[in-house]
Figure 1: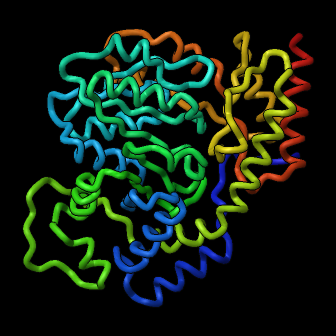
Figure 2: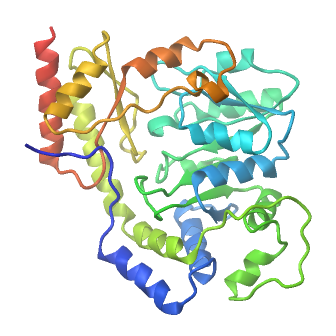
Length: 371
């Protein structure tokens, strides 16, 4: 029987050689390799007016971005409840309160009508989560933010490689963890056109030591620098950056395979009874996950049916307002319904066309058997 994993990194000899090359230099902390990775990402994003700051993870990217927007104790941030817990934790790490908002049941995107109900005089920002790469309504978020004088910090962990990403002027946080569209082992980055934000980010990721980024890029250390605000040890190291550079070089192939796999699902599952698809644009986006909605209370049955066939699936994600630490005492019905229906299918580059056809056949067979 086949064994198809839900997610997988896409590492090969290029990444092994990249790590070996850095190890041979004996300089494994943040240095020239991180500088090169930031420069290559800057070119990749096609934004001469934007800056890239590489950090330890997307969680770190969110935490530092929130701090750079001067959001702290007593402030509130609007966050869609359907997201990985890291989005909420990044807000709490700054002492602020993440306010769970409902989502559109058709795409998992933040429901701005519900978000408006959560506004108070403490609300300082909104964090749209580009769930499964669905970002078609992002301009509505920016209009909402301008109307209510809010900062926008995008959780774009699912969106690396999206053709529309570079057109926006907010603060965008990406993930390079082991199963994302490119991986550094662990890593993330922040893209922003706001120069004052970038200057603070580059210091804050290195414990707030002013100017330490440039000295480390030159192979030097800071022995007599000042610290003017709270900082963290959240920088990227040379080993992670070297892996990221190797991944970035092979990203055209990663993009092709992920988009091919997503398009096969979109074309073959569109009319399957009991299955609803999210509005994923597999031409402009590069899907990190591929969730489907299984109707009529059959999600768990389908998950078991696929597991029996050797197909691993996932449930992404449990709404954060259902977690004890972030529960604020109210229900968010759309997110709760979506959570009961959603099932993520394998879409990573290591699965073949035959694997995708095998998965599709088992979903169709399940659908026929429950009519």
